[in-house]
Length: 293
Image (cartoon, rainbow, N blue to C red; front, side, top):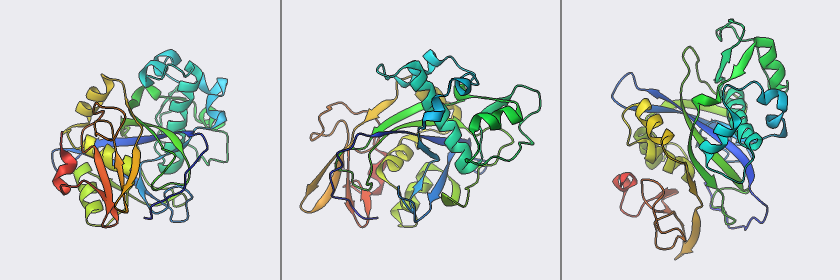
């Protein structure tokens, strides 16, 4: 991973990503599904991320929005973004579901024709998503998605060449569905406990970007998926505007609660400062300080 030094003047592009969670069968705790982006990807190539992508105009199609199981105004309220219209908010949820389905085959939907989800007819992202739902008699389930956080890429983006306004969601893996990478946008995938993923990152076995690092840190405090869903479902998602700066030739990124950040109150658990050293972003006090309250 190389640090970027170019200032990006364009406005952030709306995007969404989903942390699919499940309770571990082997030990007490939760696991999250992660995919490794193709090394030739223009966004975080070779990096382990959560499924997701850009919000498309088609996600706000009126006919598509009629296929959701939640009130659009309620979806807007859950995002805590008053400037959004209810239609825009619903489109973000739809994009999250669509991108997740395209990238790892997991679909948050329910049958409206009693046909179930066991025998879905094939779907490629070249086909209209609405047509696929019609063919299979499905309605979308955005009510299963819980807003987790919102990350807005700064103009001095440390690991990216584009700016995004990304809404992060969490949800429990639907029954009878198997998450797997698509061998196109993603070349590898794994279910990982949050601490396990951070250990692999610390040992330089995988690459991750700061939003994924901080998301895993915050999930590491939960033993069960339902506990995480209840916790984040009861509060507004934190809006994170990272503040990067260079000190002694080393890139640092600070978060709300750090003295150099304009927002004095912490918005999430974990360290309020990461620095890029040893080819990774790490807290100054070592691995265990990832997990400070």
